[in-house]
Amino acid sequence: MSVLVGKKAPSFKTDAVINGNQIVENFSLDQYLGKKYVLFYFYPADFTFVCPTEILAFQEKIADFEKRNVAVVGCSVDSAFSHWKWLQSELKEGGIKGVKYPIVADLSKTISENYDVLAGYYDYDDDDQIIFNGTPQAYRGLFLIDKQGIVRHQLVNDMPLGRSVDEALRMIDALQYFEENGEVCPANWKKGDKALKPTQEGISEYLSH
Image (cartoon, rainbow, N blue to C red):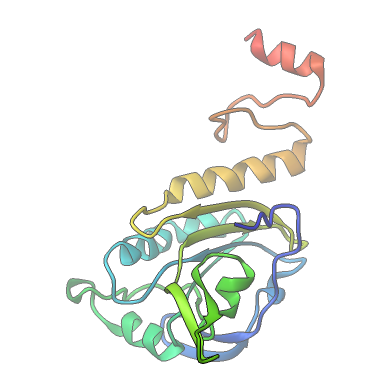
């Protein structure tokens, strides 16, 4: 598994559904450079079980991301048409109607490959035909990207394991606190807690409290 932290987030242009009902072409995270942080996450597939709980949980907290100047963007290997259909489906029918943030289509699986969350790989069989080994879906990868386009945090869960939206918000708070104050955030830090100066004196002061 590649570690992208500290590196430029892989760029892409692809179809996406925005505002819950509009398919757009050439969607790119580059539109946020210099303007917003990005919380970019992958989920395995549309019309599944754990995935809608995560997608809807991010939507429920979307105001918390927006006030932190963070754009939330989801992605799976499904087509934009599949995303659109799922977004039109009522919650009681297993749909995700009401989700407004962008959902990216990675039908070619190249975005998942570039972020190294694809659960498998392409190979050749004995007849030199391309085959796929593994599951042609993405693991539950999550990437926090700063306004310069640098990945500052990543998390990858196996497919059965849903993520914590509150933890994603905590990591955003920690990054923004460090950027604004120059103090680093210790274990279990959350907004409002004391941080520490990155010096031996700062560590000693923190531990003495």
